[in-house]
Picture 1 (tube, rainbow, N blue to C red):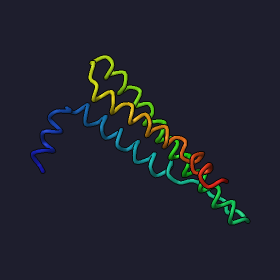
Picture 2: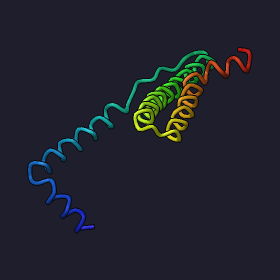
Picture 3: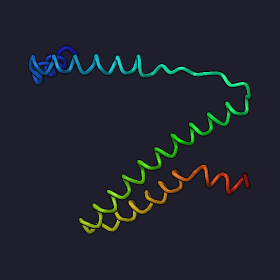
Picture 4: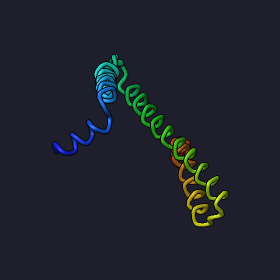
Length: 113
């Protein structure tokens, strides 16, 4: 453990260690102060559940958008390198990203709501 720490310190230098400490402190402050949010209780329990559902589906939509972006990059790289297996994986990832992005709408269609 001490050897790894010594290698880490030697690789960064004194200025690098100081910058790393400032960066780590900034991250800790962001987690402490950015992680706390004010939440107001609602009178209607159904609206609370709906708000939670909208929040979770918003997170799922964001993950789907990230997957869509990654799949477009993967398809572009496969076209550039002429790799058919990578292209197939790219299109499968694209299809998965579309399904994840529109999961709420798909579930509403299935349930009829």
